[in-house]
Length: 68
Image (cartoon, rainbow, N blue to C red):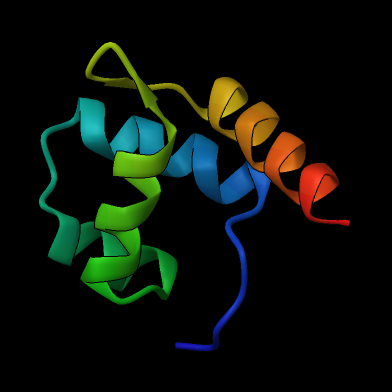
C-alpha cells in the first residue's frame, strides 16, 4: 500500500464500492489503501452524507490549489 492521493479513477471506484455496500476494509484492500485512509477520504469529501467521486475530485483539487 503505497502512500499517494486518490486519483479520479480510484474515487469513481470508491463511490461504486460504497453504493454496493462494501466496508472500508474491503474497499481499502481493493484499492490498495489502508481502511483509515478510505475513511478519511469519505469524511473529507462527502457532501450531505453522500460521497460523489466528481465532487470529491473538485474538493481535493481546490484544497491543493489553496495550499500552493
